[in-house]
Length: 474
Ligand code: SF4
Image (cartoon, rainbow, N blue to C red):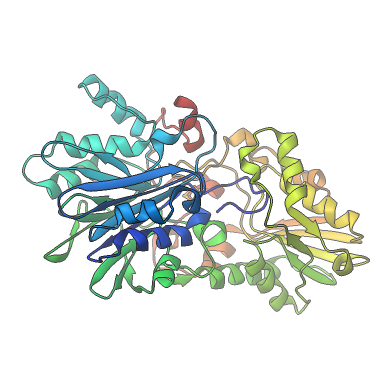
């Protein structure tokens, strides 16, 4: 989720609906509710059973679609959609999804959230066998694998392709005859199934269901392929070797507070993270404040647990440009200043606890601590509702390389000094697991914590390409 001055960005969201006469319009609303997961591109592919129609473009959902464009798509009964985040400018239109592959037999459109760790290797193999790629997106690799083995049994071909790819993938696919939803064997990214009347809906986050009035049915399971067609819904698995490892950062930072991920509400999880942080790292203070927007729930939890009042010590100016399109460090710092302000009336003469969900490079934290001091705070104690991020993410989150992650090269005390705080404490890994509250009977509570621990749930190949490196391959 891209919040104020944050240096950590989600890659995408997917949506799909089958069996509704307003499928494309509902996809538009569903994507709109998940705009926080990607603001660089959006697209919808829809079908009437004969043809796949699609429209996509760079920018926000509202920029890409207007009534006319939606009306052109809204002549079928099924649609899939995608919003996308990318880290660099340049020619990224080709990578905007859903990708549509047309052939004489039938068409296939794919929308993908996540990142494959063996895409580079598979692409090389496919190229040697004659495949030609138009994008730098992993998704095209998936399509080639499906199409290559597409004999008479489409589902078997999909299952075969999914058993070859490795990494994170929450997928929606659409042909003229079927919609498919699939999740990787670790379920690294969220994907939920819902119903709107007789229509089936899938979405990266349940907030999309709420917006269109759909009812949550269940989460798609790791290793599951769900096929929806005119016969109804059919569930299958492409592997039995599953090991749940949902991304912890979905709870900590990325997802919308009103979404539920695998039975856990995101706002409630964040409040628990704040409460746990207060238990692990209490401090004498006058006010608690949270960095808008993603840290507010944790700050409220911290305040509740300590009895110190939560105040709006910082506010966000919502009407400025997005900092992440400005590449230099200098501009990034300026961007933070434009987007956040400390509230002097709240913090002046006070000992302030500033709760944030994470520190990536440290630039944002340093600016925020500075702003609070400039506004008259006597002391600034920084509390982070997650453990230090020491390792890059290979599963679709735009974390930097290790050398750019401040916690991979500096101790907590060194970071405290660099950001200018009076004290700095991160939440422990155990505290994080406990606070999120997933089933403790599962190994690692079924959570990926690799960016905190370096223990990746999948194999990482020597030529694995980080999400943000892909764009530069264009
Ligand atoms: S490495 Fe971190 S950000 Fe990436 S999937 Fe795992 S927990 Fe999420």
